[in-house]
Length: 283
Image 1 (cartoon, rainbow, N blue to C red):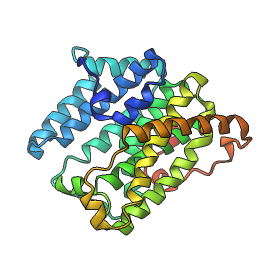
Image 2: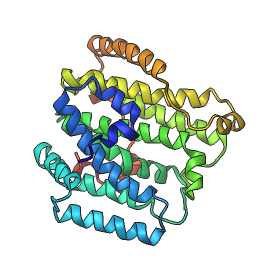
Image 3: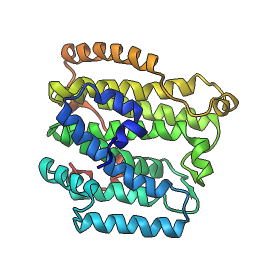
Image 4: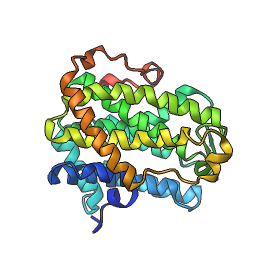
């Protein structure tokens, strides 16, 4: 395991929220992120497609064959066994990352965008929920929603950067970026009420992560047009803004106590994903 976790290096928003988790739980979430990041780094490297495919297949085989001399793989298998994480979910994640190892990618349909977002991030939300001891099926669907929402935020933020890798998940025009953020909002909203099902010690951290990441989308919308968007470079949440969003998360925590709405009433927008993937087998 690296001296400094990938979570603290690559995912500063999540790492900020992780401060509010108990240390043992934070380390387990960090181990999950390390596994995802190692796989993702293969797909995102500057090496040839042929070499990336070989390296990814090797990593996948080492995982499937439980090569525990690799601490990243060993830690991931410990999580799978401890929290009863379905193997289909892990394979969905790896399928999503593997789909990025191509010379060029262009998604044309909303279904393809949501399927990709489920595979590379909805799966992570689901696995994270398992680590946080969420067992209710409806709540696990909401964990998928939060992962999808965050991935749609990522895609909206990184359009120019992704194009440099030959990846076009959405078009380089502000209307499509705005539309993707609007789509993410429906998934952020669906994720909220199920946070009540997370044990109290973990609840605030998820509310903080949700608010901080959602803030990125709001900042993108403020750019108003493509020219301003492109000039701004990578849009991120400053430490001052993270502090503000953290205080706002206290309001969310109180709201969860006061509202009577049940997550059983949530209409999950999974119909397009279900055309390809049986989510019931994953939760």
